[in-house]
Length: 264
Ligand code: NAD
Ligand code: 2YJ
Ligand code: MG
Image (cartoon, rainbow, N blue to C red; front, side):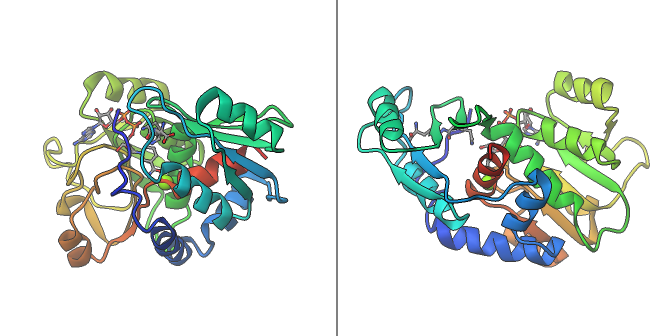
């Protein structure tokens, strides 16, 4: 699994503000507004305890600090524990945390100790990026291209199917693609080499792969949004500019907001 790096998290507040203005342009609502509308919840100064975790590859420089900034941005009262791991968890609860945020190399969770709700970053991220994509104001149809159908992409694609979109999808892993076809009814479509003359263009693209340049120019329609949690970016800056693509992409905050609102 790809781990975030301190470089990904540089200027997280600025990245979040920029993503927020794009989301507003694309959907008419900001990230808070979408989370509120989608989950039907509003933060009410819940205290969030952020616990650094040393297991596996260890603490990622600025990960906890970024979570603290993100929680504050979305209206939560948050703090980082001095101690990591079990001692940090104890410290968070003793200091009044109602929601715990913590991540090891495999799982990033939010746990609301008051109501018992728990959230995992991967499905929460996939669902919120898909939800943003689904609200694109200039979409020319209810057709979507979903590229990358793994732990983030599959729940996002499932959400789009559930919302009544016709989902064309692709994963480089044939087993995962077949699973999406059989369980979600996704129509297989390889954006890089579509079969026969089935070249299509999309105004809504949802991407969740750990690879760069997964979306070629040939599938991008004139007014197109690419909503992508995938790191690195699905298209180059040059192509984004050339095609006038609205790009929703941010390394941690949108997914974390989705987790926090989902456990309220
Ligand atoms: P995953 O490994 O479960 O899924 C990624 C999938 O992409 C795999 O199934 C793989 O086969 C597929 N893939 C790779 N190259 C492809 C290509 N060229 N075309 C089509 N499919 C391709 O990983 P994941 O947990 O789902 O994470 C996906 C990405 O999202 C990673 O880059 C991860 O770091 C990122 N992520 C970002 C956030 C965020 O907040 N921005 C949150 C969670 C994960
Ligand atoms: O506390 C720390 O600083 C570290 N233990 C954080 C580890 C963060 N984990 C990841 O980035 C993994 N990819 C799992 C989270 C999935 C969301 N991208
Ligand atoms: Mg995010």
